[in-house]
Length: 186
Image 1 (cartoon, helix red, strand yellow):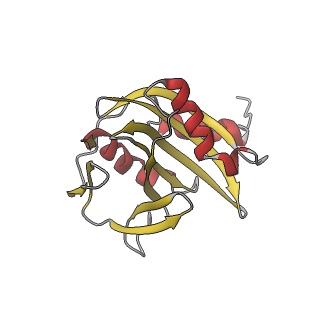
Image 2 (cartoon, rainbow, N blue to C red):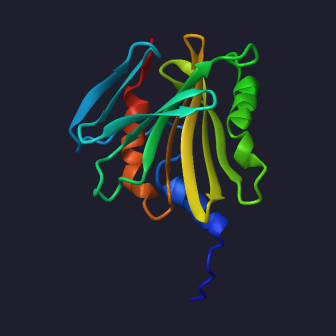
């Protein structure tokens, strides 16, 4: 049998496909103990693993909530983030404006030669039109895979995303799917 190595781009695509990164929201895992995360100001709630810690980090457009496992755990350096900002007048509920908002949200990295989109598919998230995306970028000599969902609700543009290096990406994707399966947007 002839062995033909896959190129890195195909390998990453295969990794996304194998991890359930499709336009369909996968069934949630049932092996982890979870707790309900609620943010009244943002109007969102979803289940997260009991062991996760939540921190906030300031950004140019507001604050980002960072969810990660405890230091010392194998998946500590994989993170799930939730960013919300007021929706622009162009950020309505149609796919074209969500696509534009997605590109604007990643404006700093899309221009890098190490950037690649792997997926951009319209879905429903909590009953609202959304755009599910996957990307790959190399920053500071570290390759990152990112899988997320962009959605408009309550006058806000939500960007919920999971990111990790390829070596540990598989460790947290099931937790991200749990969030997508249980999220409510008031």
